[in-house]
Length: 78
Image 1: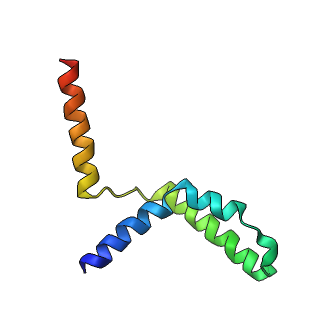
Image 2: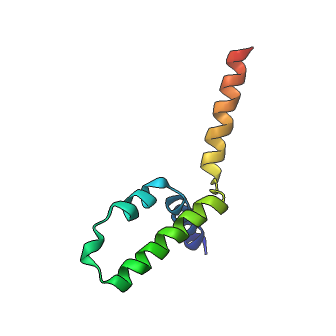
Image 3: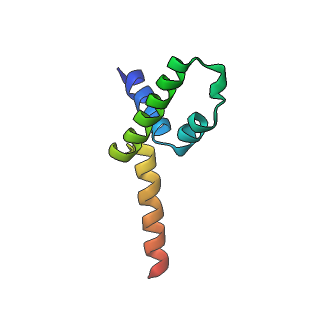
């Protein structure tokens, strides 16, 4: 189960990245049949919908890094 959680977390992060959108938008679609091109358009639309509606999940390490940075910045402001 732990492996599934890890894969889900990183898959979620990748889907929420603009890199995936750019790759889908810029790929050579002439290699694909009209039906496959429609499928690619739907995939792109779905990915953009996920980016717009699903928050990016933070893992424990990311939370630790963010809170550490915030603590350091607070110390410097004093």
